[in-house]
Amino acid sequence: MTAAPAPTPAILIAVLPGPDRKRTQSIYRYHVAYRSPEGDRSGCVALWEVSGGRQPYQVALERDDTGRLHWHCTCADAVYRGELEPDHVCKHVRALRTFVPDPTRPTAPTRRSA
Image 1 (cartoon, rainbow, N blue to C red):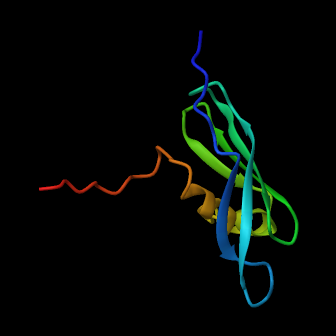
Image 2 (image 1 turned 90 degrees about the vertical axis):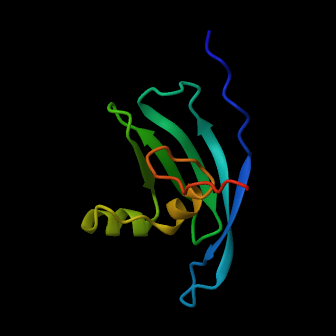
């Protein structure tokens, strides 16, 4: 029997440059639409519905067969620039990564109290 996954916040909020030409700060909401109960299995790990921009987007976190995590976003920036620049990360994914621990990224060393 597998343990139930830990509770996940229903909505995450981020303030990002908005969709207008002036890039006015705007509130973006990330609603958890799916979270895999299957710990370390390959496939979709989580899916978020993003609102606050010109149109709603989806951000997905996928685990491949080797265990590596990959982010995907349906925004135009991720789709078009991602084709030309393989390491490009859109603002929606960058913001979400601040909330979601990613074991593939090195973490800053913690300070010890004296």
